[in-house]
Length: 271
Image (cartoon, rainbow, N blue to C red; front, side, top):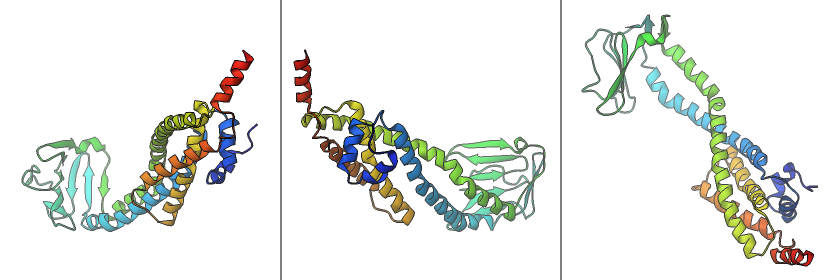
């Protein structure tokens, strides 16, 4: 029966040789659920930090565009603009047009302009690259009347910022699990070689479990740094190196276990 639980591992992984021995000998499986739990915990600060950065960016950058937005109405696929047309929404920094609104037909394409989108009376034309554009019919938005103005544009942006963590968190957690599972497998290969060099009788699953637990200190430290608003250059590389060092530490913690040679000798004696 295992001596330490997954809760113990969250803090004992920083210093306890006994934990790493328990993980190697008494724990079962490959600790995938444990890894998922640690990543689920550590992904929260990063997601909230990105939400705050997005909110700051929208308030700073998007506000410059929204302030220029006239009242736009689309009824049964037909555009009308409560402003003199063609109406241009400009980049607040460069002064170049970004979006052109024209239901009069005087502007028919994006050619000769740096704008990325053109609303005509019945279509939306979007620039895909320097030489190619794509057109969408406004009737695809449905038959109901749609009105867009400064007020509801702000409301839509605020709503998007509010739901952003719900959208980002599952995706970020999946990517993190995929990434760190790959790292664990690479670590396990190195760990197996190191265990053989020490002549330790550790099987593949034991080494994988040690590798997973070895990620804990660096991952939790990174989450705490993110929560505090601190950052270090190349932290991802530091995380890998710290975790690798902890894995070797965890394997060395098992030197009191029977060596591979002694296990082979016992098998020979039994025969």
